[in-house]
Image (cartoon, rainbow, N blue to C red):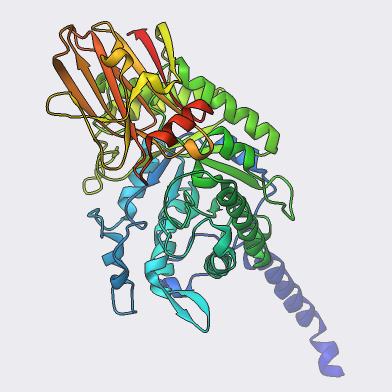
Length: 517
């Protein structure tokens, strides 16, 4: 006791110093963990943790400037016999389509250029294996995907992570819905668990362009119903993993990510345990470069309001073969400008090749005009002179254009060619022509494959192959008097009777708009 009394003052001073130390240190020891991993840790040790804010889906979409796709890298495909048995390095799959391994420097360059959002397509199937009736993702692939995701998160970008090109295990058919549902649940449970502590800059997109098992790219009520079921399963599976996934913003696509009326009308937004956390994604490579594209964005705006959820365009773009080539830059700026009028944000598809903006080796911008148009978009208008709709089988021939001489030839898979009065559509040299292929229900799946122009004596002036488009712009040669357009269904034979039925029921027809450039 005497010792205690003797040293009471010193003890009180010492205790006071200790208490101050504790008070000072507490804020630092309780500081929220960053979603950015330490560089000296392996990815198997990384467990980023950050709170998911109360930002709504609409609020997040409004913060997106222009998005960029890291296409044909982590989503590359190989043959089934090269599915990873655990002995193949992940870089083999990442470079299978001849793009280099993705580097931090590339993503830094994309962000520095002005893109604040990135979509990272990932094919999971080739790095999965089956065990005890379930699908498992190989750890090395998860870690590599996480590494690339982190490159973008380190730049404070919004990141969309998806399932892409996983057709061997994911498709939209009610006949196999239980099998596919199990695959989808296994896949997304593991992805969601792995990333559940990442913050709300990371978004999950359930599926890319879900197709039927036959891969026929044709709408059906059954396929759309299956898509709706798989979207609901995706949302439920992610939410059930907890952590930040309980409130993470999720993205659900329409069947095929299509924008046709039948697809939009049949889409059902999943029910969710939290409000205002879902985004709808569609894709459209619409080639219109003037005011005509506003009709598309108006329809998507109405669709968005009907669903009470924002819509984004996850893929759009043009290649070097865009016709007319001098309007490619105009198309990019016009697309972004008119979409922004409705609050719709768009992600350019960059595959490292024909759609590329960046060189993935030097990290330089290689399409500066298109890049500038995306960052400084403006509208473009043309003056329409005439509009034609061809809804009768009498306007067509059951044939295909011969590229060599412009004559009409028989097509083994069945084709239809616009051939008014056995000559083609009368045209005027130097004018622009917008070719629109309208389809719905079982008339979907058809594509424009070729356009030819002829002089007054029906001599071939030019033939332009079209890469299976639904919309196409072309300029008539100076001496042009007639134009023919061929279309067919690349996913299956169509008879003359079937085409006639589609036309009679208004499920398929060509519209051509003549305009002065």
